[in-house]
Length: 98
Image (tube, rainbow, N blue to C red; front, side, top):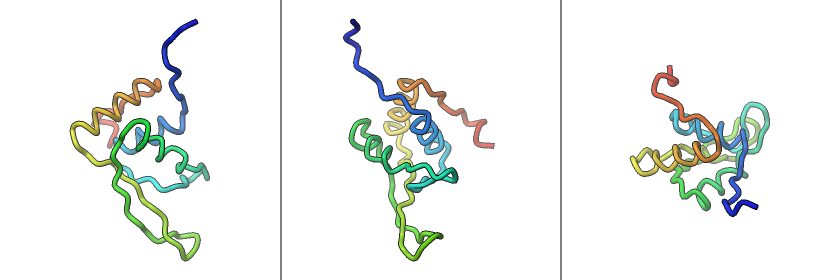
């Protein structure tokens, strides 16, 4: 048996982290109806990733939702890249932004 810690693997988590690194803002639901709320608390609490949260009007109803963006500090970006590598995801390059 291996004593290595189990790493939470999720293609949605990888996709969310890659989008945040590209500078995209994420809300609780994406265009496919996936619930990103389950990943934001894990990003903050387990991986200690800093997110900037701003309330925006919801287009579906009169309530507001939180738009979350990555806080771009050197330490925070390195933390996200490290988590992506541990989860088996690819760190997007600057060329991917175009």
